[in-house]
Amino acid sequence: MNYHMSPEEFRRHGYKMVDWIANYLGHVEEIPIYPEVEPGEIRKRLPDKAPERPEPFEEVMNDLDEIVMPGIMHWQSPGWFAFFPANSSPPSILGEMASAGLAIQGMLWSTSPACTEIESHVLDWLVDLLGLPATWKTAGPGGGVIQSTASDATHTALVAARYRAGGSISDQVVYASSEAHSSIEKGARIAGFEHIRSIKVDGNQSMDTGALIAAVTRDINTGLRPVFVNSTVGTTGTGGVDPVLAIGSIAHDNGMWHHVDAAWAGSTMICPEFRNHQKGLELVDSYVFNPHKLMFTNLDCSVFFIADRTPLTDVMRILPPYLSNTASASDEVIDYRDWNVPLGRRFRALKLWFVLRSYGAEGIRHHIREHVRLATELEKKIESHPSLELIAPRHFSLLSFRHVAGDKATGQLVDTINESKKSYVTTSSFDGRLFIRISIGQTRTAAEHVDRLWKIIKENAATVNG
Ligand SMILES: *Cc1c(COP(=O)(O)O)cnc(C)c1O
Image (cartoon, rainbow, N blue to C red; front, side, top):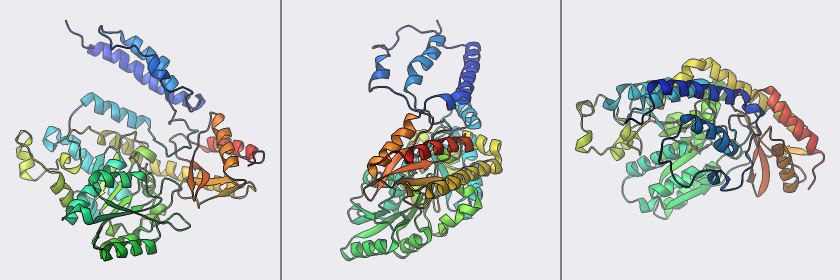
């Protein structure tokens, strides 16, 4: 008896699956963006017990439509303006398929040399493509590694910083602005830091470096040791940019690790005109950005660069006898298991490689520029509308604005946009006041989708009131 799906059956279902995905992407624009289900509703449709007998695969596919789809939020809709995009693209999906087909485990160079070498090489390409310091390439002291998420990468940076600083963690201090992503604090907590300082921001939502110096000085005077500071390029709330160069020199003067979180905005650096926002990378110890946001590569694909990999691999490397091999012992290869927390590694570089080759740098630049251009146009319209006001300058392709009548009117406007089911936005707050974020950058978002969004905003901004 053999329960495996035969290669012929796999071929048949596989072609159908590709059709299913192509149909989905072809029609996603017409589907209401968010699902209307009650908690527990999807689970209720599943049988209590796992199947004892094999089921025909047709039935499994059928339930993809019947059970799964009603509970899906359509992140790939071109009307997606919420949070940040979690983009994908056909070449990325194909890379993911090849990766699942090979299903290798790339923990060591020797467990699939192509997995490691393509990853190192593609990330070296990105150093040039994004205008990052050449020393971050693997031929130098640094290098890049693909991690699951920016949260994991930042956690890793914190662990390396803690190790490099040495001594007891109980007097080590971590700094980030009040607008920094929650993953900085989460990573610091997981790494065991006890002192985490939130530094205030200025009117542009950038870290106030005077406040950073004051906090560092205060901590030193009370016998604590500043060891880590995070700069954000493109904050999650409003897209704010910290002064990377100034923070870098404060970090340098105080022997701190300087990490840059460019999870969202990092992909835009493929366009040289945005690189003024990351001046000062020479004084940076580590950097993370997510191709799984704006670079058309589906989750998970977060790229972590480190200027000097020694503290990272020193703290991560444990060599049990069952993993020893001649290649690792020769020191001529990279074993990525020493660059991140997990041991097991998927072949994630494949989808990134496919995307870079299929779009070419010029294709990625074209689409990112177009999204920023659409944001610039929309910014002008919001600015000139009497009932709307921007709460922060536009950064990259993110707009943050509110209704002048206050939170209630702003909330009503959000509901009206989202109830249209064609466009979807989310909110945040600053200084206790609600605002709407419009993040333009979904793979398929074009002028018509932004126009449709603006039409709803314009038609309703005048009628809602606090
Ligand atoms: C999205 C985002 C994160 C978190 O990214 P994950 O990959 O989901 O962990 C961190 N920082 C910034 C600035 C982000 O935009």
